[in-house]
Image 1 (cartoon, one colour):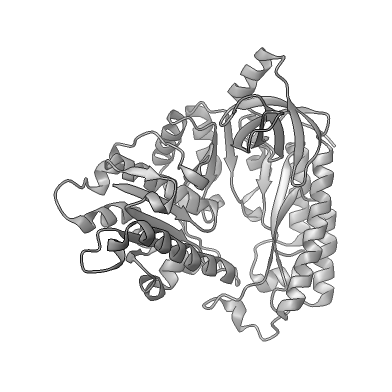
Image 2 (spheres, one colour):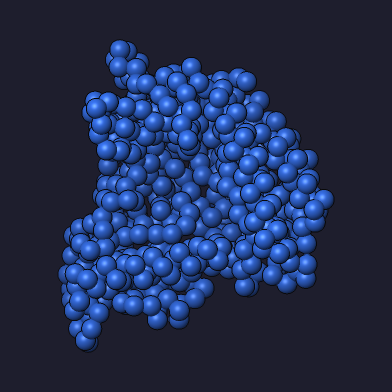
Length: 463
């Protein structure tokens, strides 16, 4: 059977569909790159904002339309030979709405997501469907998803759920309490990804820094164990809450395989707004953390998330945020106008900021982040750094236009006479592009190129 997998939302959702792909393949099925090739589909949804929820519904409808065009028998009659399984946060929060969408055969809440593959395959009945445990016990090497979800980086889920109580966040409702995967399971998944050709491993979770707290361990211990037991070019961490980091944790970056990139959600630069959000940080403590990170990880990219127009945010509080974001000089980040999510405490705050005001504040923050991002990239022009190539464009007279990332998350474009997908090359950075940097592959240094493929790291840079 041919299976199409797609998702809306975060890196954790990406990690989950990659894991599902391995399970489907272990059960003898094929992963395809578009809905019109598929016999069945899985959509992993998101509900972090109203826009994400809308995108999730649209994704399901689009899949159903594409599916119906080449499998009209799946949309009519009692046989229902194909269909869509819907899972993720939006499906968990709105299961009836999800089930009512065209050609949805199965709605799987987050607390049963690990059993989705066996549940979905079990719809056919018969004795040929292997048990979920067998799929889990005998993992096969990771193969990047075909189509638009193909990644050179392998996203590995190490933790799920969250025990924080941020007043704007619906994810804690959709994902439940924090729980961690065993280190042995994580390392097995990493090895399978490396066996499948991955050059970069990304650890991800809803609250990544909470890994191990449910059995008396700490994320730093997991990272040390991974670096000790597994030979890999790059290990990257996804989003980390600022209160989970200290100088001992930051000292882990003495290992050059750990990518010098910290994504630290700030959300607001106003102490009063942070207090209403129930965030466990303050501008003062965040400032101190950033200072330590830049001292201990020279040249690191520090990126962030921000919410504009949180309920009761005054003009004075927004001005504090704008000034603080300018002071932090982030390498980049994401800005979200506040999105009311039913079921969260923030929707009960009386003084809701008008959507148009939130939009203007969002645009102002985006402008500041764009300026600091350009300034950060400017520091690396003229340097030669390893780049992992992950995409290519149409070939021209100059060869293939290829695009990839340095370990400190600089997006680089270059031209190559051949496709270099999933290869690491030393690249001299020569100028700016619209959303990153332009570079030239240094073909004349084979030994250095070989070392770049082994380590793939950005050398420390002070500025």
